[in-house]
Amino acid sequence: MDAERPFAGEPEDSREAIMRATFVALQQHGYAGLSIQRIADEADLSKSTFYHHFDDKEDLLLSFAQFMLDQFLTVVTLEAEDDPRQTLEALMDIVLAEEFPSVEAETPAEAGEWDILGAYVEVRAQAVQNVEFRAAFTEMDRMLFTQISALIRRGIDRGSFRDVDPDAVAAMVLTVLAGHMFGAATSDENRVNALRTELGHYLQTRVFRPE
Amino acid sequence: MDAERPFAGEPEDSREAIMRATFVALQQHGYAGLSIQRIADEADLSKSTFYHHFDDKEDLLLSFAQFMLDQFLTVVTLEAEDDPRQTLEALMDIVLAEEFPSVEAETPAEAGEWDILGAYVEVRAQAVQNVEFRAAFTEMDRMLFTQISALIRRGIDRGSFRDVDPDAVAAMVLTVLAGHMFGAATSDENRVNALRTELGHYLQTRVFRPE
Image 1 (cartoon, helix red, strand yellow):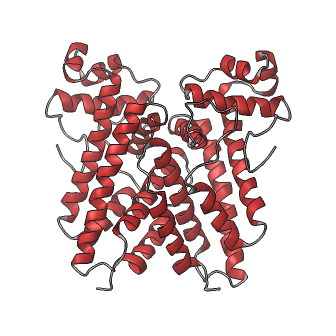
Image 2 (cartoon, chains in turn blue, yellow):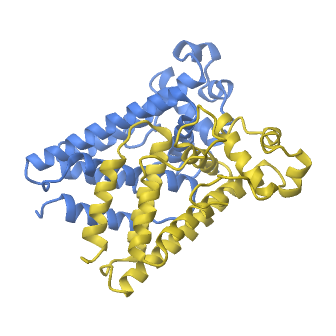
Image 3 (cartoon, chains in turn yellow, red):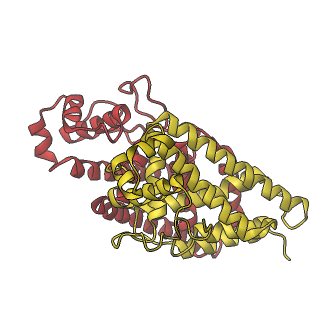
């Protein structure tokens, strides 16, 4: 699977085919219209193959959310290798892109570029009511936060970052990215350029040491 | 209605009773379980009274979202009067509170303090799929953004703020607040203290002039 273009190319196995089909079904029918039959149809698999991999729709969506996070972390890691500053900038560039990575030919014509965001926001919003989703997103948040905080600490240790509080800076950066995702998926107001400028200014003056 | 405590005291009219009932029904049943019958029951009104005020559930939820925004702006305005710095700090204090304002006695026992956030996030997430919700939230975002940008410009004109780009700073502040709302409503990870410290630091070094 090509990390730069999630869902590009042929799926490698039925599990990945189900992930792709979930994504397409979310785009086409939204969370409310998502059914295992539709996902099985889209993946060209039987419902019994589906149930071989997942207990139910909830189990699938939790795996799907984890899959999206893994994809995201893979892209960030690939782009940045082990330079803390580059990694932070890659993270920003991916989330604050003017056009968000989209699925390729499989994308239905009516689907816009923000559909990955939309799928993420719709699935995550279930965590308001559903305790299992809430536990899963809490765990994912914790994992991402720990990684970004450790990254900032590496930057400080190497002398390329100022002596900031890694947790506070990680909270700030991740909250900005989450806010942009939530806003961009639910509104046509586009303030991404202003936001990128301002977050860049914050990182320059608060976090990065002059090179 | 008491702006400091949304939904506190007796509702003034059947429209407000419906708003309160919508809030309670969202807390108890979530977006998926929301029905006009449940709202009418909770408000102790007939369905025909409901339809006197609203065309359908969608119409109601759009009014509900607008109602939440109005409440929010009222509280901010009341707390800050016309001092741009105080207004910006009040906005931060309200959204980045450790405990979010909750409804009082009517709150069901199982409902936590973050329910207003949860209701907002669940309703707003509908805008991923629903074009009318999307248009409504786009308009609300624009209104809020215009007000905050104008507020920052007033701060600059009076010499209490540095010579920043008002749009970029407004985008940054509102995105942080949106990100916190989305995260807090869908995860138990609590980074609000670190976030408040860091956003405060950003405002001190980037926006406010030393007093």
